[in-house]
Amino acid sequence: MGVVRTVAIVGGGVAGIAAAVRAADAGWRPILIETRTKLGGRATSFDDVRTGIELDNCQHVVMGCCTNILELYDRLGVLGEIDWHETLWFARANGASDALSIAPLLPAPLHYGPSFARMKLFTLGEKLAISRAFIAILRMGPRGRLRWQGRAFGEFLAQTRQPARVVELFWDPVVLSACNLPSARCEAAHALKVFDDGMLAHRFAGAVGVSRVPLARLYNAAEEIIVRAGGELRLRTSAKALAFDGARITGVVCDDGVVGAQAVISAVPPDRLAKLSSDTLRVHDKRLAHLDEFAFSPILGVHLAMKRRVMQTANLALPGRATHWLFAHDGAGAGATDGFVQHIEAVVSTADA
Image (cartoon, rainbow, N blue to C red):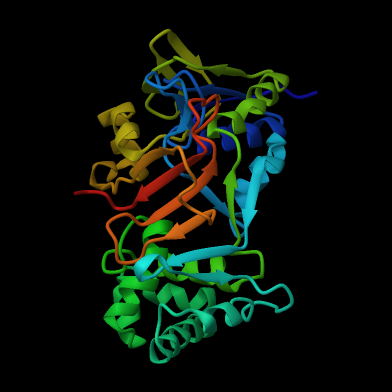
């Protein structure tokens, strides 16, 4: 048998968990380093001290097209904890709503056709404009998306003659949810991929999956996989710097000592990686030269515990509103009492203001 190599992974969010599991399966010894007391990063849950309820940081969903995260959930044995919804609801005025549903018998890209035709949110002319843009997306394919790199998705919408009301009530709600930026600011290549992969690729691509358990519980099996590979899960451990000998990175300097490794994976945001990288390392490795130039777009989640049922659908898009999505769950949360019968998570994307 060969020598088992060690890989140090900085950051215990979903990316770090996925890296550790993949490294373990590939025969490496993963050491996963995380400052917090639990895994999941921003896609985790916490115990609210005021209510005793376990709440998710924010509503996170998975789609049928998200093959990498689904593969991770399968490896962790938690795919069964995901509830799938094949209908998205769009609010209209006066409490009415439209259903955008996957037709059971039609193949992609026709599977949304019948419910889209029945939507009252849009006029016939607006539906024809949306269809025109989707046909353009289908025709360009992945190679055609390359031409839109560095350009705003708003340019594509203008080129396909999308009315302003359609941008506000159809394109923006989807782009905001997926990319956390409005059409005017989101790069077209990314937005086009969202619509191509998420709505046109295959029938199940646009199905929305919501965890029925608090997010932190999805990652329980990760530690067992890591330990079985001879690795370690180091929670409450703060990484201070990447150890660099002038030629290669040799490990991670932590608050409790140095973790030596044959390889290091950074699974932290760019601003955090910048703090871990010395000036010498950043000069040596050109990939680290522009870490300070990244900008961020926050997401705001609001939890509402209701003593009566106020939503009859599992989800509701709110096009044209300051709040973008509502997701309804039975009960107020894990361990909740006090007679709460429905827990609603409201999501505000690109919440800079």
